[in-house]
Length: 113
Length: 110
Image 1 (cartoon, chains in turn yellow, cyan):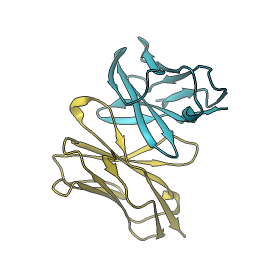
Image 2 (cartoon, chains in turn orange, yellow):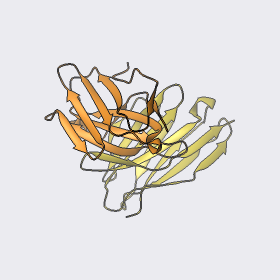
Image 3 (cartoon, one colour):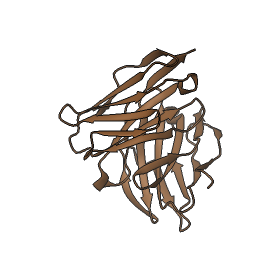
């Protein structure tokens, strides 16, 4: 069962514009959410996270929005840069259960210059 | 601080063999988790160790095992390798709910 879903396998955006990556989850026990970026032949790099007690978290060009009632979160990148081209993974966990992350399948972001 | 270090980076084994992968966490991190990444199944949680004890386990057969040492370094072992075990194995160490990943070990089973 896919508890975390990223329904868009890929996204193409022009440099300077906004990139919006989406993620849905089914397990209402998830209370901590993270976004990772991954380049080929490297491990995932942490980008930004959000606790379920918040609905927004911002860090520079990256903002994550959480809609608990819809079980949906999104990552906004503004402005998008060619170096942002990578695979983006959404992940979720239940903090009480430790560090077990459940990942989505990933979205390939291509930022065109 | 140095990041998470995984060794070796690449491994080639044959069916039926066993393999041991190593992970050195970021200094001061006591939790180490292991994940398997394959094209078909994506990133899947294997297990987590904290203070030398397994704290969490994913849905993998008993051929997959791990351990953690007193210095927080961790190893995972896969016995009786199968072709389907070919994957990128990632290790992550954790601090305040954030997991930091190593570059992974690419295992190919022939």
